[in-house]
Amino acid sequence: MHKIRKPKLSEVLEIKKLVDYAYEKGYILPRTLEELYENVRDFYVYADEKGLAGCVSLHIDTDKLAEVRTLVVREDVQRKGIGTLLLKTVLSEAKELEIPQVYVLTRTPEFFEKKGFRRISLEQLPYKIRKDCARCPKFNNCDEIAMIFDISQLEEDKK
Image 1 (tube, rainbow, N blue to C red):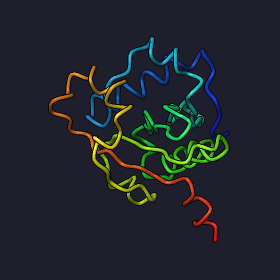
Image 2 (image 1 turned 90 degrees about the vertical axis):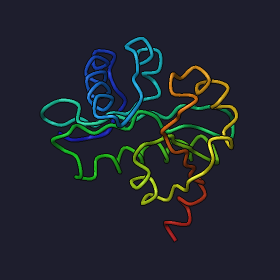
Image 3 (image 1 turned 90 degrees about the horizontal axis):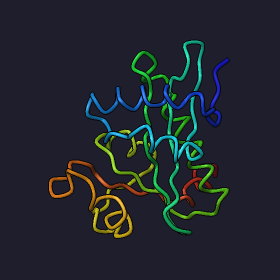
C-alpha cells in the first residue's frame, strides 16, 4: 500500500539511506543519524512495496516561519508525483499549525517554483542564518537558493 505517514523509529536507518543518496547526488546537505533521530517527529515518509520511497520534514523555526527540509524521493520513483505529495503534506501541516510562511533552501529551485515558492535573499532569513547557516561548512560559499511560500496561497489555489 502506498501512503504518506509519520515514520516509525525503526525506519530512521532507511530515512538515512534516502538522505545519503540525495547528499551523494548533491541535492541536499548531509544529516547525521543523530539529527534524524532527534527530528524524526518532524518527518513524513512515503512508503511503497519496496520500503520508503520518499521523505520530507517540516521544521518549525518561529510562530511565523517553518522550513521544509530533507525532501527526498528514491531514484526509481522520481517524477511520479511523490515529491509533490510530500510537499503538500507539510504545507498542509503548516496551515493547520497556523504558520503563515514556509521556506526552503534548495539546489532544485525549479521544482519549488512550480509549486508556488518564490526566490528570496538568504539575508531575509536571519533566524536561519544564526541557527544553522553559521555552522555550515558552505556558509561563506552557499550554493543553495532561499525560497518562500505564503500559506495563504493554499486557500487561493482552491478558489
